[in-house]
Length: 191
Image 1: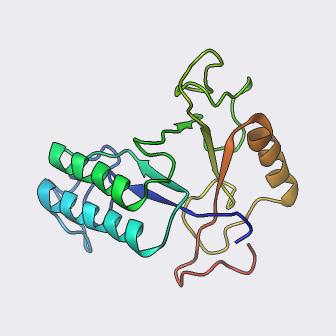
Image 2: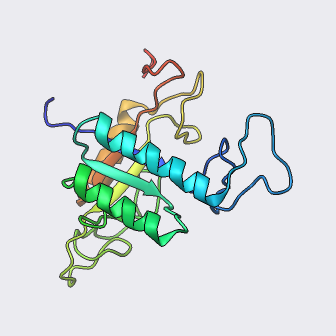
Image 3: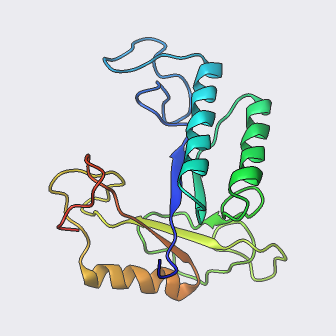
């Protein structure tokens, strides 16, 4: 509707429930906390592939697929993931077929300098022949930034969102603004 589409963020490496730490390693080797499930690497990757298949087949065409720290250890699973991208979401950006580049901050205010849609490193390279749009991601909940919903979490003011817009879209970046639903799957009235 109105030309605005949705995307999905998925972290294969980080999962408290499935015992994966920020580095992607099994975090339950010494101690499993209540509610955690300790799985083999093969079991973990099978679950991750199933979750990705659900996201890509049950919610229509998406504009972007954001994998945070993709870390399949099995080359066959990396190949399955690429095959699924081609089959289910061939037009999405931020995939092996349509790469983008992160500008290196989640503040909404990229480092000073020009942002180029050419070149897949840093803020880009005007002399590159590689098309690689830049991603500028940030959160609506702020003070400090929060990617996931928390009760009574303040959101940025309209003035701050306009400043973020000028610093990102105004400099040639695609703005990705996180809007986290509450535990009921709804957006709070305050947002």
